Image 1 (cartoon, rainbow, N blue to C red):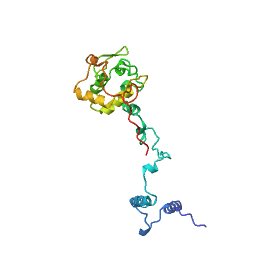
Image 2 (image 1 turned 120 degrees about the vertical axis):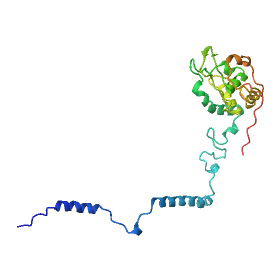
Image 3 (image 1 turned 180 degrees about the vertical axis):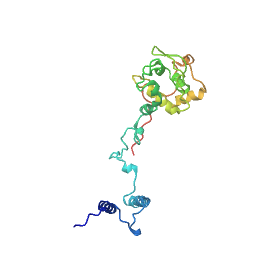
Length: 243
């Protein structure tokens, strides 16, 4: 007679399989390096490479390594790139910077300057924009509240237009006003930093204006030279010579 099969042979096979799946214990000297030690070595290698490779390769300079630099050394050709503003006349530079500054106005007056019916008046073809610069500067400097009629439409926004004199510099305000007066079909003289500063120095008002209070300034322009653009009265400063 053949010997009977071991009653636990199936369990022994499973046990042996489990043992085979177990990882072999490593000797203490064979343990893998800690993760933090590997990161430390990588960091040291990077720093060492920069210190050694820099002098050997002549050092790193954005002027040399700038991928946008032109071959003849003309600087960064991207709009707004390093040195780009040096070749723009005062009007073009104000328009460029004013376009960025207008972001604080676009939420109400919209990107196309059309405003919102009954809520925010349009800036396109607006008599407030194209009229006297003193009224326009006073509005942006101190704000406007109450009913106002623009392009034959009535507006009366709750709270009115908030003042920007406390949050924007005279130059920033001048840039935005120049941009507004020459966008969406508008064309008018630029507003300069000196003009805005003149109104700031003369008018210390702490409250918002009403349309009726601003009526005496409707056609009044703040005196000062217009360096470039429509109605220029002074020659623009020459662009710096290329080095």
